[in-house]
Image (cartoon, rainbow, N blue to C red; front, side):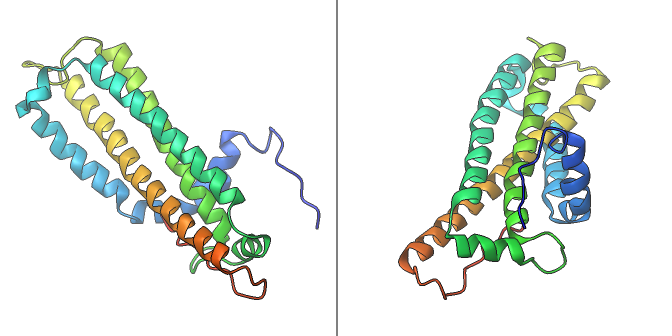
Length: 202
């Protein structure tokens, strides 16, 4: 069967959200990353007022967050490119026609989703950083007499940042696994050998 690349209408965010994210929602909630991010953000929100960095301006932290997001987003794109190009045609066909237990998505789809979802998490850091520039500016990250709104905004900002870091750790781990697959493929070019399927679970 001949396939064609997606056009602009198929590539809009709502299609991605309905087709890729929504069916995986329960698994994303169960993988523990969201719970870890919420828990660590709660601890961080309470602890930041006793840390030496409490007087650092929000704009400075936002600038560092933007620098991080730029690097990590690049890593996600690189990982996605590797996922689309690595391995032999037989190996890629195996990934595209087999699925992990409990999902109708193929191993190939799951592998690419690791990188695209992580990239969205890094974009969340960008949004949080821009809001920090606009709403915080030169205000210390932990002023001595904070407004309630300041505390309430610190928690979601930390949650987004921690979740993005957890996702980039997954990206690094997955790229490492792709390297193992590539090494095995290079050592064994016999076409009848079964292809190794990477662990693309998030």
